[in-house]
Length: 585
Image (cartoon, rainbow, N blue to C red; front, side, top):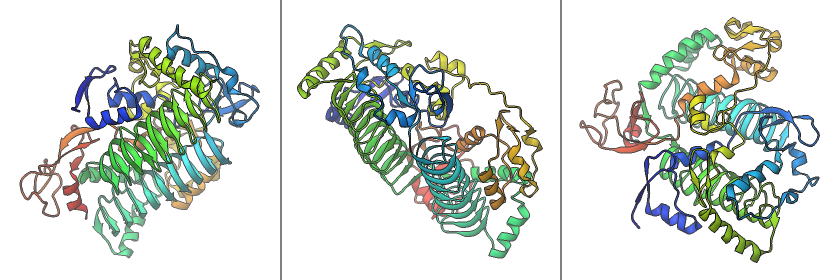
């Protein structure tokens, strides 16, 4: 079979379906997509609220609860423990399929009628202000997190202890304001480091300790801005830098930023891979055009996956021994053959167009079911009845498609329309990776919800906080601080203050959200560009960085090309794998 070029139904740009893609679609018995990979990805992203928590009324008791659903959404929301109990039966919402109306119209009504759990949480101890999380103890405002203790402000990470303001990281302790640091200890303000300890402001370092402002080092110790020091001189210089002072740190951050841009960037961030393309990929094989993926094989167009994903396409968030997942989000724990579904786990098999179903098999168009099989629209059928009706429903979806408010047509093979999401665009990971202004989001058919105004009377401006941590009194815990960027109120909590004192770090001047947004500026969007290596032989194209060793191509320009998440207009010096490794190993 030859590659086929199609025009995206959504953005109208051409995209290519390759022979391997057709083989996958044939294997799982779905039609080829009509949206391009990026539009499909964003369409799934708008169903994922990762880090916004709301107070709303429980639709059973009327009591106030924490929820990932805004109080403005139409869905019924039950407190999580009640939702999982036997006190109610989702089969009570079962209904006959109506062949006079489009499938998606009917499914949307079912989504509004069947209650949803307030949060997706498992085994939280003293960690109520968290969501999309499991096995936490003494954690605060932590999201998309698994296994953590005595930590706060963590996002998309796991196995963390005594860490604060960390994102996209695995196995860490005593880390602060980091992005993509794995197996690290006492690492501060760093990005893309692995197996390091006692690092400050460092980028893409491996196996290093006691380093400051360094880039691309391997197994080094006592370095400052990539220059070696004796042990005594290193600690004397650190003392002189005054790292407990906010003004000193601010000056150092500017210097570090220039140093980072003056050294090569690897075309992709990855660890221990075989035959992969994309970015932020680890321990994977034959994974293409994917982002933030660990331990996956034979998959494409995936994001946010961990712990054993095989043979899957267009799969966003989670994993844990999943296979043949297509156009799904929040799917995990030994799931198989799940298509066009969201938030289904564990051990879900042969499920299509369903939401919030658990330990089920052979479902089509169901919501909220547990341990059920052979159901359509929450109505029970025999196996034979189910299989026959499923075929008729698919034929009906193709003969009577749904048309959304933007004029997009939805037949069998399309994920849910963005307008079905209970979340506003600015509440989802779509806004984190592909930020839109309110007017543009509304114009493109997304929901937008302005944050609820909260009348917090701030008691101190961030600019008026003590400059040095040694001058901070316990009374700071009673202050309501005005963020230096957005003006919103935020607090310093007890364990955060204890951590900052222990690490000799100054108080943050930004609120939690603004700190997160500043941190992820170092994380590119999952959008890939075809580029050439910037190595011109003895230096980069602009002569900013002088190569330290001879490269395989000698003095002529490097001939290598690649796919990278660094857009051509970006200022980073982007090297291919061979040129990058020549400089860092």
